[in-house]
Amino acid sequence: MDHIKAIIIKLVMITVVLGIILTGIFDGEFSDSLWISVVLTVLAYVLGDLFIFRKAGDDSDLTKRNIIATLADAVLTFAVVYLMGKDIFVGDNDIFNAALLSAIVVGIGEWFFHRYLNNNVFDEKLDHHRSIS
Image (cartoon, rainbow, N blue to C red):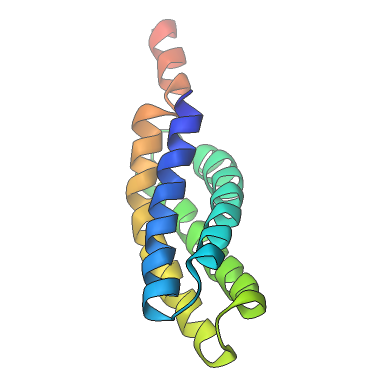
């Protein structure tokens, strides 16, 4: 249940960011922004959160894991927004700027989202260490 809640939080965060940037600033259709948000949420949760954030570095070094995962999420955001946006709604002149701005803002949000994951979703390792002590 914690993972479902986390995915919903992530989807809302990404949808708001992309809705403001892609629809509000760059005049894309909201339905296209929503489609990109869904694809990005699934990819970023699986790759950025479950594999990279959860597995990168020592469990005690939250800052290192967070930096690595946040950078990976920002790069993934840029790639997804650029590739999908180029095909579905943003003019070629604006797609680079739209993808870059989206990557920066989503990356900032991901920094805080990873802290939420660490404290509320990925606590099984902490529980395991407590039971051994």
